[in-house]
Image (cartoon, rainbow, N blue to C red):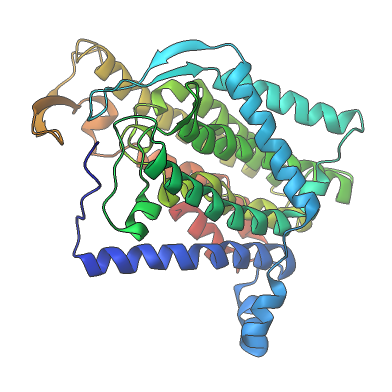
Length: 398
């Protein structure tokens, strides 16, 4: 069994942080949804409502999960699970784990992405399913996801104790820490269904694209056209998600997959990180903003440039690691740092750190274009309603 995650901070800081996130994230999501959809994007309006109505007002604005919301979630999850299992894909090996295991994946994310978008748009085009229904029941969907995610993480906790998928698992002896950080590094159902790939990639990231298309369709049905601000946002989002699935095999070598265990921390981030980034779309559905061609093209070009630089940062690092440093970065042999570290079992190993190209500009330079990309796909909402600024700024930070 692998050692449990070690505390970096004082125990009291760790416990307070975990409990704060466990208790504050769910209401935060609902308040964001309410502000953008029912309070015209006004933080002040939401605050005044809660100040006047108190706790009862908060209970009243929290939507109750409905049967239709659960059906939408279940249908989407089942469809993505089916694609993950049965679409063909190249065999890809992940990095060797601390316990010496090497996970094997099927790289069919790009195919699943294409099938998902074509299916979703076709269902709308041929009148089989109206995506506007998803928008109309967003609050109920978010509420169902909140409760469902807790149930899901409890099941992961139980699985980690009773039926771990590999030796890369273990308990800290504290139920809260095990629930929050997770028990298993690579939990699977059977041999082929990787749970973290499903939550992080096929459910979480795929929902970015599906929701972006949903908002476009809803605005079109409400106004008879799609504003240029919505088009810019949607194009940037779809390009970003396309980039992610094109590079999905590289993502399996990142900290999210190779180091973070499957618990509330990673599952909540995977499912609800997408929600935080969509609140400018919710606002724009009912408050269409016309940017004008010059400004729209500028935001689009700037956003596309940031997405490309973010991709190129990851590409450089992945190529550097794949070739063990024997490659060219910006036409020259890369500079590097050889870092040594000890594994959980005490074995000393070496790791190469790239210090050329984008990685020569800053230690984590890839976060700069990542943050700017988020800024450019939320910034159109700022031009009409200044109070949306707070939430769009939060989108960038989250």
